Amino acid sequence: MDLPVMPPVRPMLAKSVARIPPGMLYEAKWDGFRAIVHRDGDEVMIGSRTGKSLSRYFPELVTALRTELPERCVVDGEIVIVHEDRLDFDRLTERIHPAKSRVDMLAEQTPASFVAFDLLALGDSSLLAVPQARRREALEAAFAGAGPPVHLAPATTDIELAREWFEQYEGAGLDGVVAKPLDLPYRPDTRSMYKIKHERTADVVVAGYRIHKSGPVVGSLLLGLYDAQGVLQHVGVCAAFSMKRRSELVGELAPLLMESAEGHPWAAWTDEAAHETARLPGAPSRWSGTKDLSWLPLRPDLVCEVGYDHMEGDRFRHTAQFRRWRPDRTPASCTYEQLEEPVRYDLAEVLAAPGHRAEPPGS
Image (cartoon, rainbow, N blue to C red; front, side):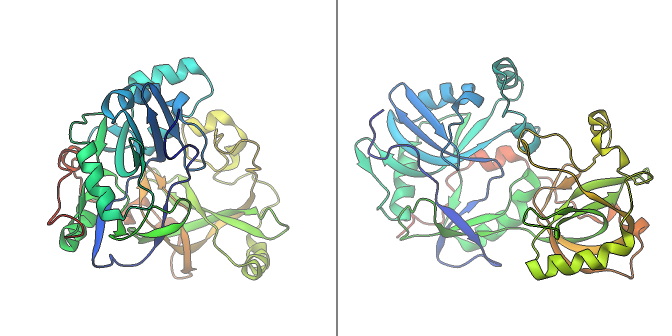
């Protein structure tokens, strides 16, 4: 492989802002695996956000990218899996498996797609120093003949359309909107773009905590919601506390600390089979590796309000943000029914119309 931009490349990142900023290029925020693809003739390499190769996990994409991409290019995008009419992150994570036989089986059963949203090199030319607006024009030209499972991400300079996307596209499993300054060069591994994500709040039961890796203070609170059968399901964690606050929480939670998990709703967490029928903390994961997933059980009597962006199935997709204690709420009232469900939106409509631009970027 001999390209003007060689692997590994760490992708340009985005920092969170509360509102969609004006005067930029806007795209949907995809909920998948970020990937930088290098193609030089028959050679195709899919690099992860950290620079590691993802090629062996997505052999069907390697084949498709060899066919659909320009012969020599470097492309930034997202690997996603579409299930029914929306993105499915759980099925995507299943693709990271050490056994080739399982990878091949899943490649056939749950094939992945690649959504391209930036062009880093084309032919013998590096585009890293080229402004975002011109890179987008080059990307659209380069992908004019591409077909599924390779897609060009929709983009627009119309902020009103971007606001519509922010409201509509969540129903297809997307994660918000990304805003890119039109004169922005490509800056690997820097937060030079802006992301605007949905945030909602929920009242949840605090039913345990993990010790912080640095010492005997609270690392994360384990959160639960009651399902329709009255079973407390583990839905995620909140973890963004200062070290001073982590230490204070140990004392505040001490009256609720149980000597053992016996009698706790999640007492069966060490039984791998139990994770098949209930959502419990400490589920075996290929992502956690040797990470200590043990936790200290609390009587499930405490309620707090957390902020979250969206759900992935029956759990919070990302770490929730602690907002406040809710002594006025009973644990039994913390159910899934309180959660807001986005209106469904057909993902095919997102992928089928990449040319939603009010005017050419930079005009």
